[in-house]
Amino acid sequence: MNVEIHVANSSHTGYAQEICDLVYESAQARGTGIAKRSPEYIAEKMIAGKAVIALDGDKVVGFAYIETWGHERFVANSGLIVHPDYRNRGLAKQIKHKIFELSRKLYPKSKIFSITTGLAVMKMNTELGFRPVPFSELTDDMEFWKGCQGCRNFDILERNNYRMCLCTGLLYDPAEKKPAPQPSGFAKKVVKPVVKKKNPNKMFKK
Image 1 (cartoon, one colour):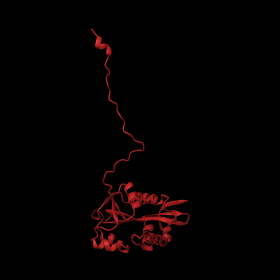
Image 2 (image 1 turned 180 degrees about the horizontal axis):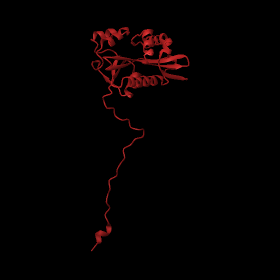
Image 3 (image 1 turned 120 degrees about the horizontal axis):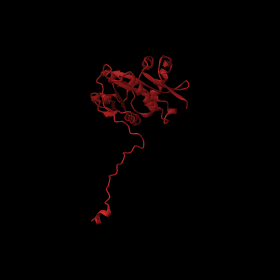
Image 4 (image 1 turned 180 degrees about the vertical axis):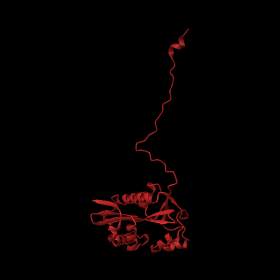
């Protein structure tokens, strides 16, 4: 595997339809909801520099993109996909880290959120400092929730007045202080108490 992950640009728009096909095939195989996006929408994200693409030579093997909501108060990392032949190799994690870094660079003050049904995505987000939250802590921009209309579970979201669905909401807030990671093998220094030894000669001193 000789995969390189790039910040997408206009030179990658020819992959837009193939990426949409990968998203659809993944949704069908897993039986879970993934919001549909058009090739034109994917191409726009590439041109704007708001996407990352993983390529093995000329073959597209992974993708993710950025959306902004609520006047850029919120950022969503969306559409994470890996080609079936390249799964279980750590590629999804590399893509997730790349799109997260790009989001922080472009929108350093924005809250980053994700909604997902995938346990692997939840784990990756948690490692980056995301925490699970109710949908009420996510954007209230209805344009975002309208994007879920292509998902097979949209009726569940709609019946619950956009407050819950099968997806889990995850949020990264840059204003929250994150605990500094401890280096591997870290151990607290143990300070032994100083015990004064009695001088046995003093017992016989005249």
